[in-house]
Amino acid sequence: MSDDAAVFDRHRSLLFTLSYELLGSVADAEDVVQEAYLRWSGRPAEPVENPRAYLAQVVTRLSLNRLRTLARRREDYVGPWLPEPLLTTPDVADDVVLAESVSLALLVVLESLTPRERAVFVLREVFGYGHDEIAGALGSTAVAVRQVAHRARRQVQARRPRFTADAATADRVRTEFERSVLTGDLQGLMDVLAPDVVLLSDGGGVVSAARRPIHGPDPVARFLLGVVAKSAAASPNMYSRIEHAMVNGDRGWLTRLDRRVTSAIQVVIADGRISQVLMVNNPQKLVTLDEHHRLTR
Image 1 (tube, helix red, strand yellow):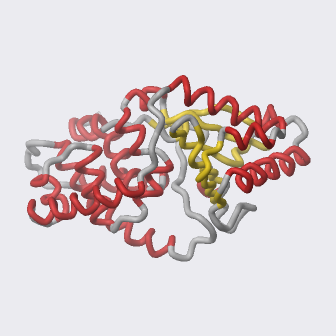
Image 2 (cartoon, rainbow, N blue to C red):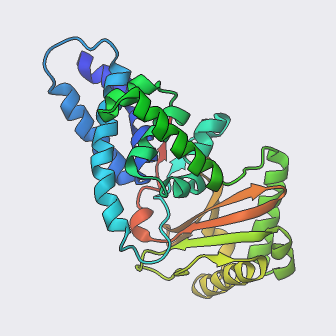
Image 3 (cartoon, one colour):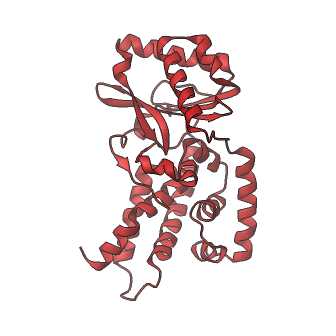
């Protein structure tokens, strides 16, 4: 491996994490990292004092260009849009900031920001870059970046979900959620759902999914049990189709049919109850769920 390739490889996982948080798409983030490598290897033969900052700047600019294209495409998306899920290694959960930043729930919140606001928020709040460094990446000034950072932080704080810090409580709630869904226990399921619970189901117009968010314990519970009943008719042994997985930095579930992943599910738990259920069913977003991604910041 050449020196340039070795340097790039040391930062590859960070660059993928950065691009994924900006785009919410595994495939697009991988494309950005590959393009960044081509630019890195093809740059003028001059020493780079800080390869990490240099490469992060390249990836940020490439991601922003792609994000503007994706934003236009998402305007015509059928039904709720959710990020493309990914399987993460267990160590991601040990970094609370990183785990929250790649969660499906927070990535949905970041969709409400402009591309520039999203870039500033991710670079500042997740990766800890200074205002001057971010300004260099965006072709702006430190003063302007501070203003954008303040605005983006305020918007995210107003929308971001609250996460339960107590792992034992979260595990108990997930266990009861899974048991109730698989056994058809409507009341048991409603008991673990928050009064203001919302379910988002992303089928992208390709497969069956709820076209609008579903609100409230009773509608959400009945929808989930209906999905299970329909799936059980197609595959009687539901237990063989559901597996636990680390989805976007937290415990979640994958469902399979004939070894093919048919959905990725993650829940948000706060105050001992589930406040969000996020289901990605769009098959175009599930193709990378047979491999784990190492994320760093």
